[in-house]
Amino acid sequence: MTNDILKVLISEEEIKEKVQETGKQISEDYKDKNLLMVSVLKGSVMIMADLMRAVTIPARIDFMSVSSYGNGTVHTTLKILKDLDIPLEGYDLLIVEDILDSGRTLYALREMLKQRHPKSIRIATLLDKPERRVEDIQPDYYCFNVPDEFVVGYGLDYAEKYRNLPYIGILKPEVYSK
Ligand code: IMP
Ligand code: MG
Image (tube, rainbow, N blue to C red; front, top):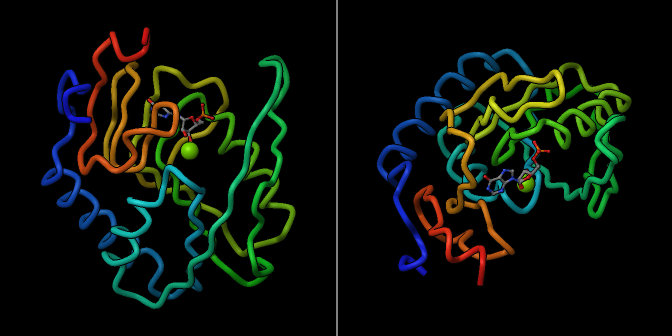
């Protein structure tokens, strides 16, 4: 698997340090709130597992899985593959994602979840790829900015592979043409 990696963009140690820092910030910001962390499957499993352990205040967690489709001219439509288990009223919702790329998925998801009337909604993402943004959406918390390159590892996949790499890397071009 590591033979397919051209270069390591963000090391395991760098991720660990930054996720700790982000968890500390979230703990401060939400100390008087009713934090519910929602992980968007599957890409955010790693950041969710590490970030929730870095959060030092009481927090609930839940999981959701969506697939997006759309023609690019209108806002994306979401299909819910796995919905949340609990209603959102009274919660300060923190959506935890792997990457904010075009922003289509998170824009649509945030709009949908707003309609369930949580007290507040914010977004925490491991990676932000601002060059590719199509929708008007920014993360409230992000760990790293990445250039406009396809990255894998620490939850992120290419064709469902490489999610279990402990770092963020760039794939060799020949992997795509296989
Ligand atoms: P969006 O374009 O912001 O809607 O991103 C949708 C999804 O595309 C993300 O949640 C990721 O699962 C996936 N994605 C976007 N960029 C990358 C990447 O560089 N590597 C792996 N997955 C990506
Ligand atoms: Mg994803």
